[in-house]
Every structure is written in C-alpha cells, then in structure tokens.
Amino acid sequence: MSVAESTTENRDLTGILLPEGLSDEAARALISQRGLGDVLVRVQPLPSLQLLQVEVHSAKDGLPCEDPELVGLLAKASPGGRGAFVHVNHTSKQAIVHPFSDGVPADGFAGEPGSAFEAKLLLAVGRGPLSAITGADDGSRLGIGVASSSTVAEIRGRRLAIPAGMPTDLGSFDFHDGGLGLDAGTRLCFFAYDRRVAATAWEKLPATDLAAALKQASPSLFGPLAGLLPAELDALTALGEKTLTDAKAERLRLFELLTLSGALVFSAGESVTHWDERILPLLHLASDDAVIDADDLDDLADCDGVLHAMAEVLPTRSPPGGEGSLLGFLGDEEVGPLAPWAGQGGEYHGSIFTLKAQRLLDAVRALDSRRLGTAVQKLEDAWYHALHSDDATAEGFAEFAQKKDEESQADSARFLRAWAELRVVLELGALNRLDIGLLFYEPQTP
Image (cartoon, rainbow, N blue to C red):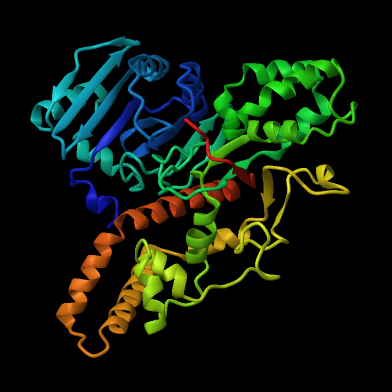
C-alpha cells in the first residue's frame, strides 16, 4: 500500500511537529543540549505539508522522551517560534496536543482522538487532519519500539545509524544479562565496539589522565569486568605521565576495560552452553527435513521445546576449517584474542575475543520467521509420526502440535530474543563499521 493510499487510516503518532526551516543538525544540537542521555532521534521533513517531524526516544527502552522544555527549545528556534508535542494512540483512545509559541507553552488538549483534538492540532501546527500528517511521512513508522527511517542513536557521544525496522526496546546500548535460563557456567555476550578508543588511549593518553577519565566513568560501562577497575587504576596512577605504550605496559585487563569503554551495542548475556547448543546450531541448519526414529524419542522427550528438539536432530553446517575451539559454530579462523601480545609464549587468559562476523551475520539474516515456522511444522510432523507410526491421524497430529507449541513457549521466547539481540549487534556493527567482540564472564552474584 502506498503512502497516498493509506493517508486516511488511523495511524498513531508520537512526536514534535514544527514549521519547516530548522536544520537537521540544529535540531539535533538542541536535543543534545537538553542532556537527555542516550537517545534515539528521528528528524523527518514532511515537505508536502511544510512541516518538520522530530521524534526522540530513550535508547534504554525505546519509549518516547516527553520533555516540554525540549519542545519549547525546538519551537523557539523554528520559523514563527511555533511547535507542538503530539501524541495519539487510537487503541488506547489517547490524544494529546501540547503547543508552544515563542518557547512558551499555550493551552493544550488531552482527551480522545476526534473533532476537538483535530481542531486543537490545526490551531497548534497549522496543518491537519492527523491523517494528512501521518500520510505525509514515508510509511516506515511502525510504532513505538521499532525504528523508522532516518533514525540515529546518540550513544555516549557517538552517533550510530539505525536501520528501519530494528527493535529499539531491547536495551541494546548497555551491557545486560539475559537471566532467562538456569544454565550453569560461563556466560557470553556479543558486542559491537570502536577499537580505536582503546588503541588511542593506550598510545596517546598519559596514564594519570586515563586514570582520571576511568574514575569518572560509570561502573556499568564495564559490565561484568567492573570489579577489575580498582587494581588497574592503581597501576595507572603508578605510571604517572607516561603513556601505556611508553611504559611498555602489558596489562590485558586494562586493555579489556578500555575496549568496553568503546563498546556501543550489546546482546543480552546468555550461557555459553545455550549459545553453543541451541542458538548457534539453529542459525546454521543445513536442512529442515527432520528424520526421527524410535531411538531418538527418549532424548526428545527431555527437550525443553520444539526448537531444542530441532537443535538435537536436524543437520547443521560446520564453520570453515571445522568445529571451533571456543564455540563450535564459530571457526578458529574467525575468532581471535583481543590482545595477541598478552598470549605470546603461553596460554591466553583474556575475557574478550574478536570475531570476524560476516558469516554469522549472513546466517542470522538467512533465518526468518517463515523459514523457522516451516521447520517447526516439519519437526512436529516427524516427531508425531515417529511416536504414532501405526495410529497417526490428522486430529491426533493437531493435538500433538498444539501441546508441543504450548510446552515450547518459554524456550522459543528465549531463542527469539537472543536471535533478535544478536542481529541488532551484528547489523549495527556492519552499518557503522564497528568491530564485533565476544565477552566471556562468570555469572554475577546478586
């Protein structure tokens, strides 16, 4: 459906509407001036209506930032000094217009969508009805929690391009642990980072300056390695004005902390076991044709769900060069130590490894919900007929499939979340020319 064909639909809107004329960079500068922290920003011209639409969302949860002072700043900087915050949710029957004139709030509206709202909208922005405004957009705006076109993330002073359609409610821009399973042992998250941050600090910053900068940083920036910081700060203080290069320092943990200070996007941490035995195998299926015989049934009965069963019985593709040492589906030629100098002449004890991620990104992109759904149906069919080779019926299969789908909900949700979060890391890494890292860590005690 084209934009022109859909202008009469009841589309929702949450954003700031301004007269056209304020530049993209001027709008972004005013948003930065407000100090809202890490945000997602969309500055979208609506030339057919001579309007500028500005959307600001929190990068933590994807929710709109409702900040009257920001609306006032943007309105005052726009031609005519006018603008308005507009929020409409047809499902919840919510409609808000918060207008400003010369940076001063004017009488607004809060109620339900309808004629009273439309009248206030027209008075506030000089354009209407709402359907004309939403119809003037490019059609990429799907709602809160999903990125539209022209969206960028402002993360710790770095601007990242965000592809349209990317989920924005996953907490992707800070380290976070999934905490969804009971698997014991070491955990792993994938992250995208700018390797120049650590390299520049190592080569050019005096140790005392670097220590001061790290002291001011939030401990959350370093994720599960934050506990290493005090010892490394002491070491930096002892080096005085020397750079780490000049001091010929070989402090692997410090280099890892500096690397995390340049990290911008994270997947949720999951157990290494779950990555290696569930998530990565399902991303590397060689076929969705399930062959299940009687010998498989006892093992399948212990599976957490249908996806677990798929990972157990479907054939998979090994990486080039064969199964990897750290993770079976990542080849040894694709994974390397973050700091090779730290492992010379002995065992490498680092927590962070680098990843050549293109093959994994291709695998993540190749799997879609339609392909996964087909594989699930085939697996359930083969499973049912292996159990009921002599008494299979269409009704029996439908009941079996429904039961398995219900039993699989928690396991499936866990996989789908990890798949989505991994794709965000890899896609943003590729789009913004960031490196991809693997962070291994032990479970954190409360």
